[in-house]
Image (cartoon, rainbow over all chains, first blue to last red; front, top):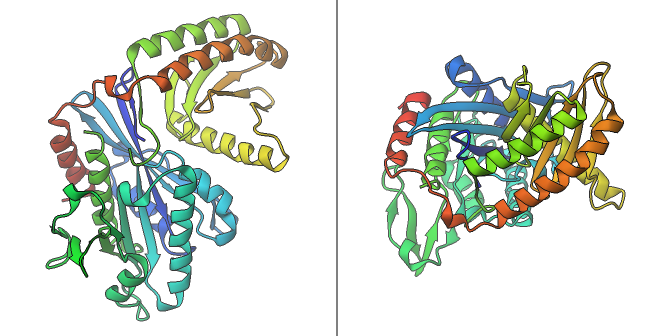
Length: 224
Length: 163
């Protein structure tokens, strides 16, 4: 629900990084903070515990500049990943325009990923939002670790896709980010859509901007 | 619509809100009044310009109010309609408007909490009306962005985040 402020000629879009604890959500934001020109970003706010675990959220505003007379800004938020912080996690989703789910690729974290994904769906539903209808991307982080699960396994568990009901959307759509893969295709006679996914090593920055670019472009499309 | 409903804020809305906030500031002797939406975005400011990072302030205000909303529910209240944070020199008073935005009043020792609370009542009633009308307005009446906007925004995204 981007708010278009015609008085101040501003459009603000809210992007939320969601996912299990210690998956790399804050690291994604830190990389963006460090790499984007200081003139294009604001201060990064972290409401964290003494041990640097996110308690409430991290916040980073990024300024896209003036486009056709509108100042366009992306507000990047992370949620706390730990299971028991659900109350604050849910609050941050309010008014979200796009979601990035940061999954931890390590095999041992598969259950935590699945639990966090279910939690995302639940919290979105409680706000009256539909994950399948808003800009949504999945980032498989920590691809450099030896115990990282294979992508097909992660896709099957976290991105099995949702049925496409609208006849207008029932057409084969290639995945622009992965050759010979598809975002929308027919499987066993049913049309299925998947969220775009990205591989990342957030600590080194690999894949961080690919993810951010994809989600922010999809969010901008919803403004037209 | 996929997420929550979009809303737009027009120049005539801004004028109406400015006049309500200016009248309130004059009567209460408060320094600054800000309107922040519940998703954490600054909507409008009146009075002395804030010297702090207004974007960060708006996001923290929304979080503060939302967290307190949940605390209220735990106590069996539907909401805390207003909050007050007291500092040695600077204080802030926050009030809910139409369940969608928050009025934030910043004041110092040139006035008192009592006067602010007394004067804010009228402003809250007026703002409630303005915002309720705004949210009920047909969303299609907003002019929207120009057709070239999308392409140019994508170019800017590539430039800023690397292509």
